Image (cartoon, rainbow, N blue to C red; front, side, top):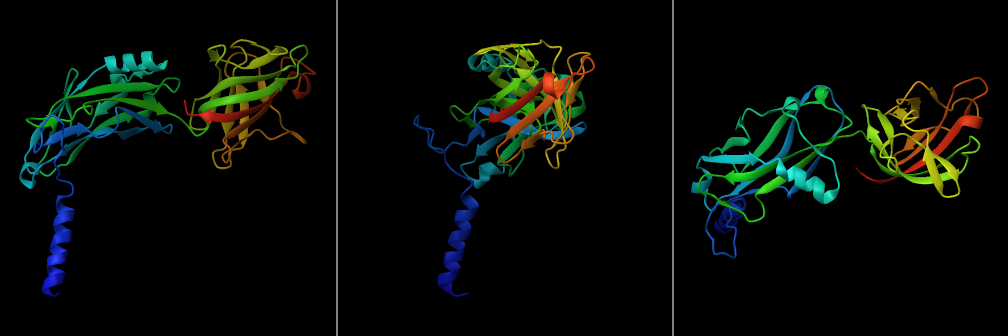
Length: 313
């Protein structure tokens, strides 16, 4: 290697080495200080597939932007405070119903110690970031709930906190691929309730491959019926369908009732439309009926639904 190439190689190596060691310029004149911040945005959403064992889940990370290689090699204590009020304020501002993640559902990674709401860890020598990880027990998770935790960056030795990057709320949801907020169009063919409906519907995860209909207008689990032109009602929680899918081909294997003693049966047999999920369009097709006596089937007690995905819930 000639002298010119050697100098060029050393310059490239130096740029690569110190690209992660930087000065964060602050309008208050804090140039040259080592800054610490929560790396993610102030709201971090964590989506998990259903599981029944214990899994490590990274909620967020705290970063230090060292202003020199020497400072990067220093060990620095890190303190975060759990702030439950962040969850309360988030729900109030967004109309959501996230519950505080119960202590019984998770434990902390061994790198984090806790005393009440105070959580302590350490930037070891050479650490640019420290992950905040919990061990989540999927077997204790209530699939009908969504959970959240809020944290504030309290201190990190003599490091300077970056403005606006010192708190976070983590929203944790366990969902399968069929879960979501949908617009549902369909009809029930029992007279006099055979009018079409076009309503908001949520599909809530109840297992690895099952979702339950949540009728938004009623604020409860259930399913609508049309009672007139533009008029919608329902049978109440007694008719509360759950769809079960084969996750390999997304064909529905069962539709049953979670709400009462009235049986719900998926429409099957020769010529029956296929209840399924179309992953390309994120559309659910559901064909089922309720049965309370002889002569009742899909022709006179049936529902035909098309649910078009709108957004995650």
